[in-house]
Length: 251
Image 1: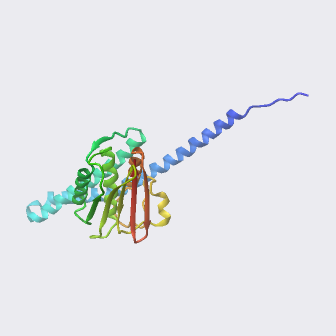
Image 2: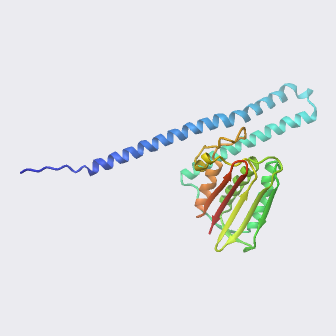
Image 3: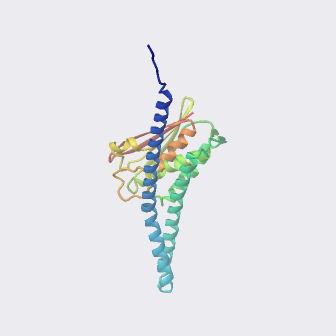
């Protein structure tokens, strides 16, 4: 009896690798499509406002009151900042994907750092919502990466303000739990639909109830990447029309 056999292990491995490659290409294609859609949508509005204000200043400068000139200049400044922030978020994602962001801890005064950051967020959001900050007893200095913490706290605080009605309180608490430091940011905003919560950390995904609030869908992705680099974890709890709580924990 003559028996012949063919080892198909390599062929199956090649087929599996091909399927993984095709799936990755499909995913990248979808991300590119979402990116183009986001850019065209999020950049169109500020560009139109900048162009309109610049044309008005150019054509009617001598006829405008000082207050009107100031309003148009502020509009140009505000929307230029908005576009710069959009570009920064996009470049950050590229840095993460390229492996260029690293965890570089230093000894820092957390209380001073956070208070300064809260003041910056209040200023950037025109004090739309009050932010109540509380810091439990802990060492005067801690080991942390200030650059990563800035991205984490700034994004979460700005989201809390953006998705809350004017004047609603945002709470920011930091405490020690054993060897871990836990940071919690709570708002009383619009909340997140349950169906959207599983996509919170997917690039370019935005909740269906955000309305006309501007955004790229990259903020929480950046937060998650920064928390991961810090060796921590993040949990988000939310109920529609009741608000959102974000808990970040790191050793």
